[in-house]
Length: 131
Ligand code: THU
Image (cartoon, rainbow, N blue to C red; front, side, top):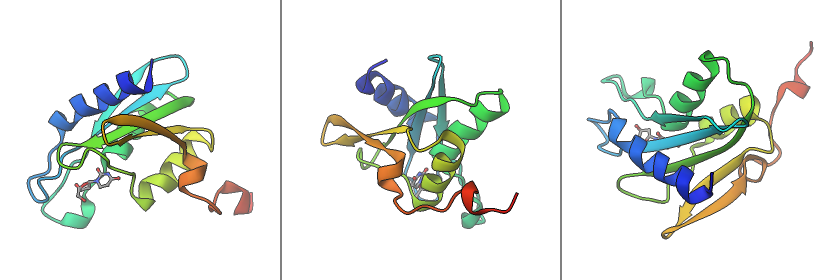
């Protein structure tokens, strides 16, 4: 699976978005270590703050299917093709996927790969919690 192929899955996922308020349709495609792909899209509600981002719908749907090991996530939107993950999603991706997760974003038309740990430096994590 190339970054471009995963990005094509993310583009496809933008069609599944429910974004009647912002009209900003985001798609994500999450790749597991054994090669499965889970698509996600943003879902908005009339109480705006209860909206959930595309990255988290992809990750949570993979999680409830028992997936725990992830390689990469591609993200895009139908309006601004370059769509970096919001701060909340960066935290969730780092926590549940680990610091080595590749995050694929478009740089103009070319997919560019970042580590999630680059996108969220000096992060909070489970190591700070008393167990
Ligand atoms: N959105 C995402 O789905 N992912 C992000 O990382 C950034 C923002 C969505 C939330 C909302 O439905 C719309 O984009 C506009 O903020």
